[in-house]
Length: 485
Ligand code: HEM
Image (cartoon, rainbow, N blue to C red; front, top):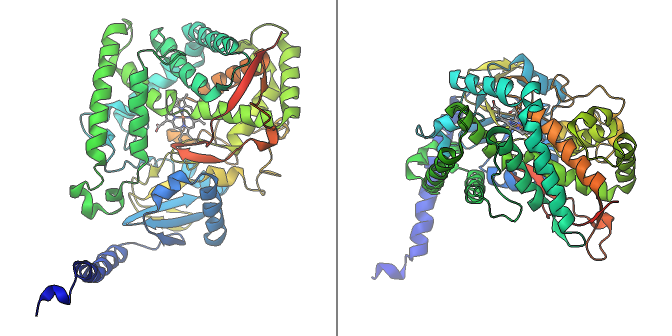
């Protein structure tokens, strides 16, 4: 009898897959038997990809899971154990008490930063706090983001770029502007002006940095694809998702353009270390936009909450009159600071979603009575903490007033509020960010009246968010500027 008549190709595939099930069963049984008792949690198949796209839904899923499993819970993704801390106490344990043991970083198998040729280009992705990481942090602290450094030549470049942004928006008076696009250009320029005294991209998107910017967006998007081989090392050699090849190609191109730019424009005093660190800072923030999303989200909340907008404008006007906003004004604008803090509370950025940048256990340790095995991923769900009614009253409303009489600051010493993380892996760019975000926000509010396009009402503004490395607004914020007299 003809075999095809009884067994079709589909049947063959189906039966082969059936045969694989016991193999998978044995594989996982073997992995599970190797692990010590973990914090209570659940098995999750590799749903990480969804994680990154889910925005606020992820927060509620993880926050709800934490209610069932406790403030320290474990998730198993394939062979990989993830620990998620979801309360201020658990955050303190991770970021303070066990800061040293948990200060490694998880790096996906496919991410090119672990390629030895490219390893030197990273601070955030340094797998542990090694000498190289320490030297970059020291440069950040002393040369880039110290009060003195921020006060010196940076200020001139910073003010120039902000003035250009205001002039650009002024030239678009009455037109619908994608505010994110305009600010997106401004940030890299503030950084390049601070370090090299040059503009990197221009407001019409033609500058030398635009090609780099596109490459960075591409590499970040690739980095967002869940790398299955990090969760199932057994398939690593296959590179079935082709991520590594694609990333390598983009990053090689990136480095060659970058080096050309450096050759052309380097100032004598810039050491190669500063360039590398700068590159990393650009990848982290100049382009992947923690600060930009903050500004857009702050502006969107101000549009929705016109009473807050008026109060903020009044504060700025009474402090500086018709002058332009300068850094020296910031300490006299408490409501502005409260607006920035409140935006960071409702929409904390940092790493893949509001989970800080994934930490990794450098050694097995005991946290809150549980064993955290070496090489587990550790995240702190700061969004769950910041939106917990036990921590912040009426947590889903935008109420800057809550910060006016509060001692909560950006230092990362109070674990109710750590938008910049805390401990040795805490954000080194915090002094820069907490100066530039209010400065630009104040300039936007002080220089323009803002209108929504067409007949759109502020209540219709879509505040839905999604993850693109950081939590950001899904719909671009389109506004019409009108210069204020
Ligand atoms: C609103 C603005 C910003 C926010 C909310 C923010 C937040 C964060 C957070 C939550 C982390 C992870 C902390 C952890 O894993 O424990 C981080 C790390 C980092 N941030 Fe920022 N950041 C901002 C701006 C900046 C800026 C302007 C720069 C530099 C130009 C920067 C550079 C970095 C670097 C290099 C790291 C990695 C540090 C390390 O691994 O040692 N950030 N940031």
